[in-house]
Image (tube, rainbow, N blue to C red; front, side):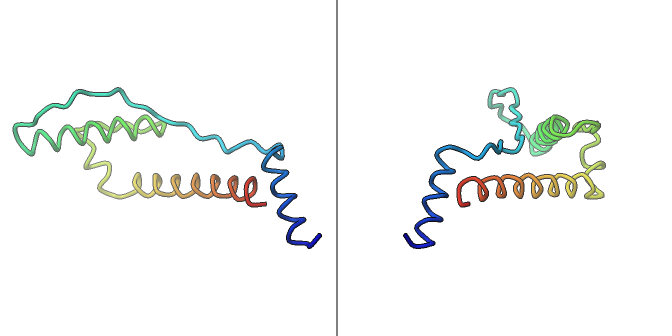
Length: 105
């Protein structure tokens, strides 16, 4: 048997039996569904978007105290957005390593 075939069989065997490695801890955050509401003005729409984004980010990260009224001021520096982007990249790398290790040997 060639070295390549042996490696593929070993990989297939690990895929079927697992190698004892658990997937990284990923948590899904679900928000309450809200009924569609028409907006009378773009200001109302913007306020609603700030409310939704503040609620979402507060749910993702402990210690944030965002609301529609302070959302733009808190986001102005870019610190929260950069921290979020870094967390997304970190989780993507963890997931990539898990998939690569467990499914592609």
